[in-house]
Amino acid sequence: MIKDYFLLLLDWLRMTVVLKSRRLAPTFNEGDIWWCSVGINIGSEIFGKGKNFSRPVIVFKKIGKDSFLGIPLTKQLKDGSWYVPMHYGGIECRAILSQIKVFDQKRLINLMGTASRKNFENIKERFRAFYLS
Image 1 (tube, helix red, strand yellow):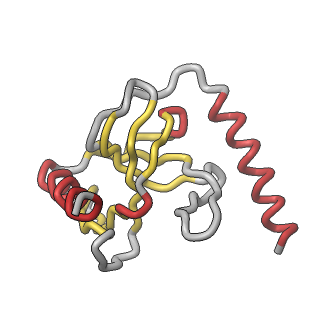
Image 2 (image 1 turned 45 degrees about the vertical axis):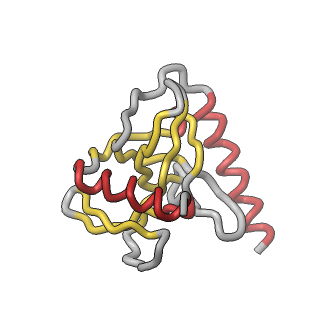
């Protein structure tokens, strides 16, 4: 088990070198849904998958030209105050409010689409209810 984690960590370290060396990172906007290199994490933190350690993330709030507050998405149709149902590209999924975090634009891999205005407004409402209540 430790050996497997060590090998996974080495793969992630290689990926971070690739991400950090990117000269031109993509432009992004609030409401965009991107494949994002989330990485490997510990405990209950959300984990990226595949060779890029990626998963879909919605750009919730731009912090500057280089970073944003992002909310990871999952196709697991779970319920709870931290899961916000939404659709994109004909796929039903959930935005996971409990996993919101700051991402650098260099982690963005490719644009999947943009959330509908209705879905994005719903996420904002649920965010306010979850974090500001």
